[in-house]
Image 1 (tube, rainbow, N blue to C red):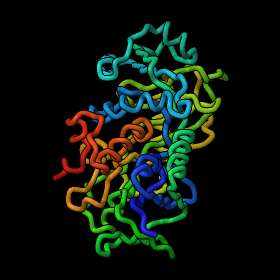
Image 2 (image 1 turned 90 degrees about the vertical axis):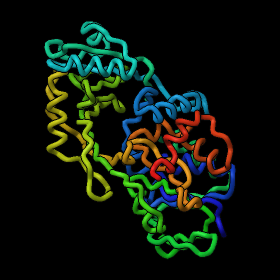
Image 3 (image 1 turned 90 degrees about the horizontal axis):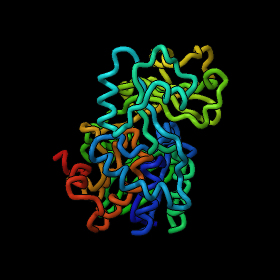
Amino acid sequence: MTYDFLIIGGGIAGTSAGARLSHLGSVLLLEAETSLAYHASGRSAALFEAQYGLPATVALNLASRDYHMTENGGVLSPRGLMFLAGPGEEKTLAQDVEDMGLHPISIDEALALVPALNRDHLRGAAHHDEAWDLDTDLLIGNFVKEMRGNGGAVKTGQRVDAISREGALWRVSAGAETYNARQIVNAAGAWVDGVARMAGVQPLGFTPLRRSMARMPAPGGHDPSGWPMLIGAGETWYAKPDAGKWIVSPAEQDPVEEPHDAWADDMVLAEGIARYQPFVTEEVTRVETTWAGLRTFAPDRTLVLGRDIREPDFIWCAGQGGYGFQTAPAASRLLADVVAGHTPELDPATVAALSPARFG
């Protein structure tokens, strides 16, 4: 069988693209791991905050909001967001307030929201109601259901190891299997440049950046389920409720030489916990589990969505950089519009900012 679209990568980028493109033709999605959303998509902080990111990312966030709120019953639940400043961080917090549209609150108000905070260390706080937990499993499940409902196929455990052209078709090899397709969608996360090289397409220079996380008991035995996500001024750390527990991240963005199944750097994690520690009264004495993911960025840190300028049957859905779940509904819609030759719903400047054509 020859597929209209062969998608490489089964994270949020690939599954959302597959759902949208399944309305335009036959789709096959290949995922190297034995389950979908194994790498970055399975290790997300899972928050929807529309003002988070560069302008083109924010445009995608805003265009995705209604889908997240309503489609298939919605995937969002209330969380809220609070930025905190310690000594010497007041100006940084003021910039966060301006950039994110936050509402400054008093120390007393911050303590009312999160009683585990350390009053003596706090020098400022700002809050934002419009931040929601995002059910990542449900969102991916919805996209996969849509894709399969339109006849699309999903195959896991299919690591692509060769790509070639034969006339107008791509031949994609994954172990003992070979598949034919008219168009390839490169949604391989940290591996997107490697996929491009296999296909003889010029890589765009993506950089995978590691981010580590630690899960621990909730501070002071509190029930954190109603607390907002906490972020240190300038995003030097963050903390968030997680299934009755508490996760803390140093919010690092450390480049890695080669894409891989990432793991937490113990020293970086310890440094991040040390930055977080003064903001709460409860000392961190035990970490239950740790993990890390790779957030992959294009050189300008903006998503890349559309046809390659030299090989138009090679389609980029890449560079989500930690914004994949937030942007997925609008990003996948834009991708399908571009592929179908339809006028996108997004404004032309945003479309241009996201296009592979910007790399010349």
